[in-house]
Image 1 (cartoon, rainbow, N blue to C red):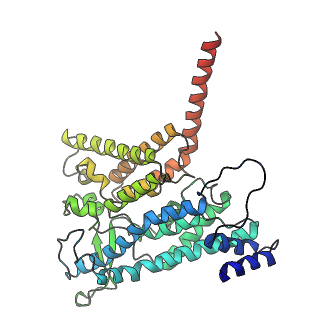
Image 2: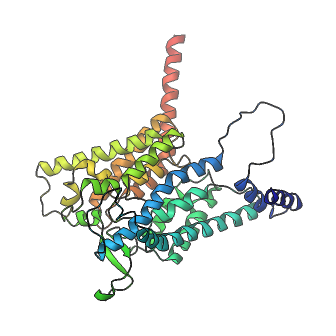
Length: 401
């Protein structure tokens, strides 16, 4: 009660000044606003931007915690401190040693993401004189989950600054951006520091002193192996549960699926976009399988490894599932019409697998596919709306004829 009263007093003291939004932001982040509506007709709802963002974060936390355990597990697997066979409820995986290793590597990424991103948000709210926007709450959590675990913190800080300023604030802030901010940050890292974001390797934290390595071990990802036409060395259960190397949040399809169900149940995420993205990916993967079966692509082709992969397995590897659930469904940058969501999601899935196969130097396509469709989302909605208008005009003419 004392903290709330002090914040309220500070709000009154600095009301009308440049720094007033700072205290308003802290107050509304911790407590419900004191203001109430007066007169007129209003819709009462428990939903607001802050609660929406917090709901998405709740859906992301299991992926974050699992990613920490998996980072430590992949490290111990490389130094042969654990066996290669484990189960989802195995104590060998859910070991505190694994968690501590992952925590040491991943927590700094989370801290830098939030500190830099929120600092820029606060600076812009002071300069522009508007209220604090909670839009970065989700972006700040997404970014550490989609970058390599060994990414230098200064690179992350530069990328976050670019993504927040160029990807969002120049368009007017939360709700006005045309590109997903988290993917804008990842795209900046990919083009500015390609050797760190190549997509074919994930660095496993920890050193092997006996081997004379530096401070990390290079572990091949599934997509990297398949892009080189190497055999798939992981079982379906390992890929589904997430006992594979990869970016922090993308490995466990099970937890991503549970997060999707949670977002659909809370009506935060669009099931149309999620489902249509999956359909699009399956269609593209099936087409590639047919191309291989007909002998149009031989085993010597550099595309053979990913083309010959069973079409449904594309859903279990790489960042496709994570992107389809948590970033393609961004309500600001996605299509707004129901029919548009089906088209938008289908094209994301279709293009994701196409890029994944035809770009073996960077065997992942969901980032570029979502950013591309972010640009075309308004166009899709425009033609959907115009189509509806034309159909209604035809019905009107038919009735009046």
